Each structure stands twice: as C-alpha cells, then as structure tokens.
Length: 335
Image (tube, rainbow, N blue to C red; front, side, top):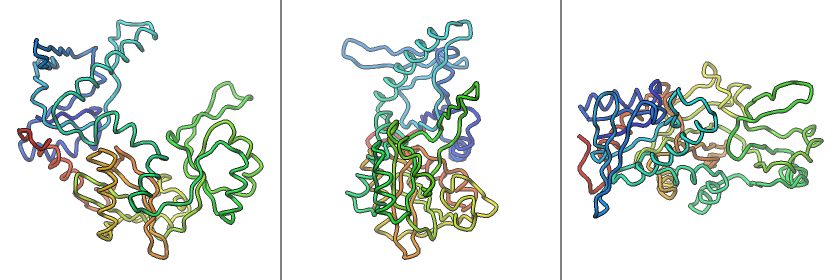
C-alpha cells in the first residue's frame, strides 16, 4: 500500500493519484490534520518489540504496517477536536500528535518520498546546500551568509555593484510599521542590491541574510529529480521585466517554459546532490549563463512541479507514481 500525506485539495497529489489508479495501485490519501479529531491510531508493541500500527479512519481499520511507500507531499499539522477551546491545550494536543505521527512514519519499513522528516528539514538549509553542491562539483555564486553590516558594503564593491540578497529560509516576512496597528506580511524574493539600499546596511545586524554575486542569465532552470530520473525545464525569465531577477514573481504569459536537455555531467550531479541529502526527490534551481555555464542556486526538497508538467509535458507525476509503486528495495512492492 502507498500512503499519501497531503491536503485533500492538493492538485499535485491529484495528478499522482490518477497515475496510481490507472495502474490499479492500492493507496491511502490521508491528511494528518484529521488526527486526532477525526481519526484514531493505535501502535502496539509485543514483548519482542514488534510494532503494529492500526489507523481507524472513515469507518475502516487500516493496517499501516502494509505501507511500502510514503509520499510526504504537503501534510497538514494535526488539529485538536473542536470541543477543545483552550489555545494552549490545542497547541499541546497538536504537538503531541505530530510527535506520534513522526514516530510512526520513521519506524515504518518503507520508502519515503522525498525523505524522512529529519532529512527533509536538514536539506532545506541553504547554506548546507551551497557547501554540499560546491563539494560535489557544481559552480555556485560567490556568497556571504552574514549579519555583519559592513559585509554588504564590501560585497557590493567586490561584486562591482552586481549583488543580490535573499533570505535563508522563509520568504514570508513580517514588516512592522509604528504608524500601522497591524504588522504587514510580504514576500522577500531575490533582491538586486541598489546603491540606495546601502543606506540601510546597518539593518543586517538584526538578522542574517544571504548576499551573492549577481549571475547573468540566459535561462533559469527548474530541475526536478525523481529517484534516478531528471526533468529539466527552461524558464525564459529574461523575457519579462517582472521575472528578470526571480521567476517566482510569475508572469507565465510572457515567460515561455520548455523542456531542456541537460549535459550528462550536470544531470548526474543533480542526482548525486539529491542522494547526498538522503532524499528521493528534489526541485533544483539553476542558471544557464550567456557563456553556457550551469550555476547552482538552491534545492527545494519538496518543491512544486505541477506547472512545469503542464507547460512542458514532462511526465513528473508518472515518475513519482512509478517510484512509489516500486517502494523500498528489499520489501514487497505496493499492491
């Protein structure tokens, strides 16, 4: 059996489910947000320490010991029953429930896509990614990760005024204005440093930031690795002013997407990077320079790919379904 952990309306999960149903593969789509309010789970261990996992959900008793692959797609966080009104108690229940679920997932003898929780978390660290990618043989931008204010001034000079900044993890930033009653949330995308920005260089003291040299772009690449398969998509981000510095501003009508053929050595490095992070899936962002060099930027251990499949025809959902059905080597394949 294949276990899909994601929200009920997740379009990525729906694409893979269609592939699984075409193959008559047995699967369970479960969102952890349903636990413990709408699902019961019991883990029992006998005197020999052999575990048995039973999920009671939607009128069925499901033996989770039959799971041969788990897709940690976009699982929700457990929620307490609505009859629990105290926020502190609800938070406690959610945390306890999440700890139980992670204990279950990590002790099941099965394949994890993209990986177990500790590996997914570790792989999200951009500093870790850059160091590892460089060691494997990727070219990376010259980079500073710092909260030392003068570093912005120095790097701006070293990079001849061609520098960018970006956050280490969460692009959702809360901006506080003393004249406004509520904080404002905004997205911190890749930002080209302008000379006027240098006047605020002291603000770096309050939180670390990534400062990199600006890499000229011919194309941006979104490279989706599924097991040992690599699907590269070229994003013509330079055709739109809106996406010139960060394609995540999305201007799909003016930024053509197409399948891209990677050199064999770059494709092999992408697979090696994902495996070195103990993952089975990864979405890699790279730049192809006007001189034909491939430059690594970052990897998302659980990145989006639906729009890439729709715009380029790359059979990513097919590859994920194949990976899940194959399961963990050495175990019985999922039914």
